[in-house]
Image (cartoon, rainbow, N blue to C red):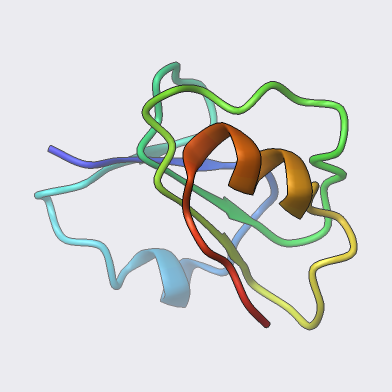
Length: 78
């Protein structure tokens, strides 16, 4: 089951898009993905299992993209 970690309050209409096949909450370790709105992710450690970061908003200035790419090997774009 994919684990989605929330870093902000995300609108319920958005969260309702996740089925029961996903674990979605704010308190978890070893997440597969992060869903963020405005939290600063520059000071967190990205786990080895992290595959994606999605921002509910414009821009990616609150995401440490260079660290995420170098630690995960994943490509990101805006």
